Amino acid sequence: MESSSVPTDAELAVLAARVATAMQQHKLMLSAAESCTGGWIAKTLTDLSGSSAWFEAGVVSYSNEAKMSLLGVRRETLERTGAVSEETALEMASGALIRLNAGVAVAVTGIAGPTGGTPEKPVGTVWIGWQRRGGAACAQLFHFTGDREAVRRQTVAAALEGVLKTLTD
Image (tube, rainbow, N blue to C red; front, side, top):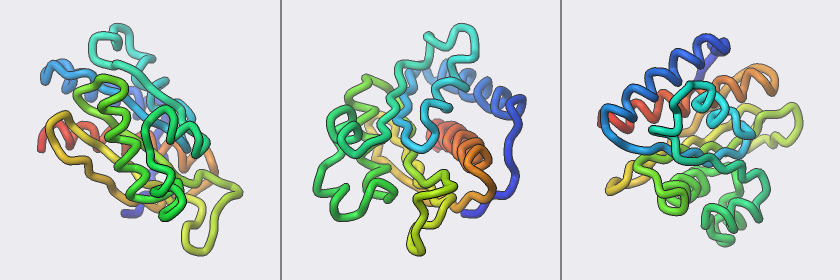
């Protein structure tokens, strides 16, 4: 999936408010496992007063070691597919759901740039995973454009939009 629109702070706030409403309607808690966004999802959500009623926890698992120890991502997965992969995003989402005691989890792993890209995984490559308790984890590949901030903003927006979709599927 390609994206070219970089959301503003105001647009992210509106999206966060929609997530808040949906989480409360479903009486579920949300957790986030973040790598390339460095806690931006959790920050966007907790900017809302009263977010403790529906936001459980966020983990910034930047290193592979943190992904393994905090979220239960398997070493074999990281060695076989790399940190920026569908499999890692799925395991991060599942780990956040279980270890952070949530009803819904979102996980992001990607290459925000400007360095770190490869021909196979260029800057802007982001995998986002979601899982609802009792359901299967799913993940989606994105190829965002722009500088580091633009990639991260687009990732936060796509992650939150996916939470809404997870609640309505």
